Image (cartoon, rainbow, N blue to C red; front, side, top):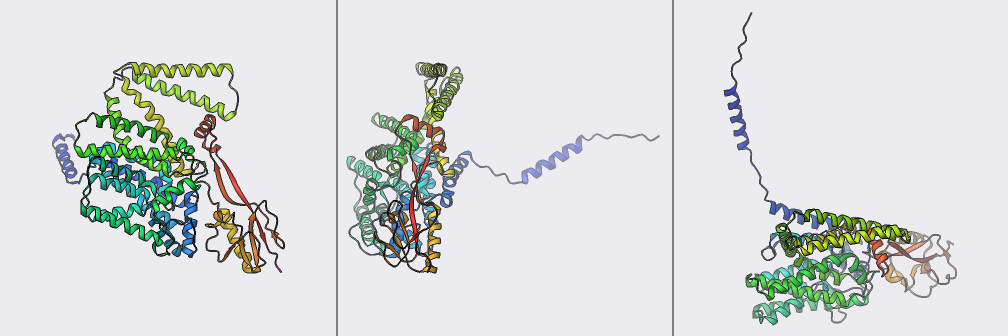
Length: 565
């Protein structure tokens, strides 16, 4: 019988462990700082939320109006819808290469995608955490999402506004660089005007004037932009044009959205603007009491407060108009104010006493959610509540108010109250931003839109005209809505009378049928208009809880063709 002897393996195990440790030490280890990761994620969220709109968003609103103007400028015909911003002029040039809106949208997206870098350059003044939160807020702002990938005349506005603020705050541009800044501002739309006014006002109040080289360079940039706009960037002179002020006036007089500015503000921008106003008041209080920050940071915060105040005044004055540009002009400074303010609120919350608040805060949020669910059911069903649900809702309201009162009257737990506006505002912004970025079906922007059916109608009529001959005639009342979908259709006659040479006619539905022409069978929608909620709490609430309730109203036209000989 053979004896089997097991040798100790301790030495062998130690040798294997040393070899494994040596191999691991030779492998490169990449460490990614959390701060850098947060900036990367913020920039990706900002850019990706705007990317899909380039292809799937319908042409509508200000984009429909101003693309129509760009197409008319491309054909050489005068049209008031062409406002000579630099972006509008480039769009007219791109239409020589492609009759699609996609290239112009890509250009707008490319300029807007530089905003994360602009916010990154402000981190010294906003702090890294404040700047990242401000970037996230800008990422989720629904109306800015839509504008950032839109081929309207204001395609460069968001980027110009942010980079102007960077230039004014950092003050590290060489004197000749201000010529480019001034040219960019005067050749863009009106979004930067509140910032320009605030910067001039703060500079005059503090008696800080630009040097002569800077003043001369900026003046040269302004003059260059006005001269180029007056000559419409080579398309021919048509009177003096200062594009930002012209679009500022157009935002009051033209219908760039089917909803009013007030409707859009209530639905999309209340958390950002109201939160920015609260943050602005807090910032102004700190400035008055001299919080000890360096002079450059104090001046930046003063500029932000004045900028936001001017923009909010513009917003309030435009409530009756049909445009979102004043809302966007207000949300940008509000986001920059809110970023650092939210950081301070979070710090205060972490220092608060959560021993009891950790139960009270979730309970109040749950009761509020339960109350909102019951209210949504009443609104959707249109039923009058019975006695039992009314009592239940009353109990919920009392519970919510009692929880808030307890937190408010307990000094050590009072900072936890900031959780409620942050949660509610965050949910509203998140649903609005994601709704505009990904669905767009139940949203109010853009509206009105040009349906794909109108382009198909154009192809049908051109096919018929190649066989039967004649001209395409459009009624003047329908021409503004049909300019863009009928682009690249040869000669079009815009007339309130049907000439004898007409081969196809697009006519108002309620007008008499032209003699000698037969109706083209079908229902022809030339415009889709999203009906905003009525000015009542129940309608707004229903829309917030179920965006699918939005109603689309088509504008229809009658189409007639000449019978084949």
